[in-house]
Length: 194
Image (cartoon, rainbow, N blue to C red):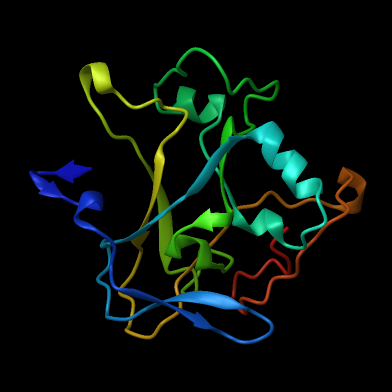
């Protein structure tokens, strides 16, 4: 991804550490140097699977596995961006449902250690952005963007990196049998991640 001839995402991530943040939070990504507002932080990487496979994996008995999933674009997202899906695969009956998901539960990079904070808030200090790469014959499949995190404010060295997972809130009436409490302590806290 480039802007005005400057390479942004391809230049590499900001210096980050992974640290144990305690029993309640587990592992977390921390800035090892100050990061300026607007700077590329890191990419969210993992195994790209279709939504049906993600649902199957989350039905397995792994507490919190859902927290390692990152939904990619839906048909509604593509339409809003003026894009169309490539032919084949990733069919969705619900146009708002993600066609593909990044699963970083077993395979991923430092992005999998970025914890949740309800936003907008000071605690949610990075923002995910879909990045499409390739031009002409090598144009990217709009269903499969890269996910890049950018600092939405200045971040101090040693500060934990967090973003709002944006997981749709469910209730018992919705048939949701799993939920994960939120411990972000932000002014915008919803009380649970999902």
